[in-house]
Image (cartoon, rainbow, N blue to C red):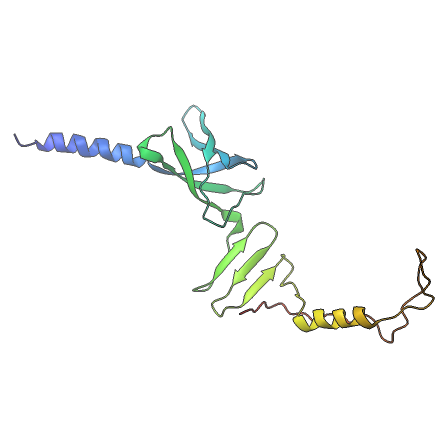
Length: 183
């Protein structure tokens, strides 16, 4: 016996309803140091809010994040096996932390700092007030040489204090760079 068009419409309608709740975008309302978060879902016409506690978070391997309080974090939640009783967070974002990137660029950021990997291979580290200066190898070598060769006046044996440095010149200052390059 061939299925009727009404039977097929009912089956497709039931499947569509089941799929509709399979993936959802929800607000993150509470996090702690564990890998379980609390999410806020729908609000019905009577102002009842759906709260989903203890939702496990699946982070990418090698990366883990936790939104700052006071933000607007959102999560994409998948219901494992289509069952609403088994939600899992698979992606997150906070719209107030959005950034503009050029093609083939990557950013790792939180509310205070960011690391940008440019398409050119340049790595920029920024704490919100501009790129941070990083010591060059030559800067570190100069300081190492200064420490190894400077002398003090009034040196005594035992636990006493020695005098000020008598080496000509002052501690070298670092030139630094705001571009991190490595091979």
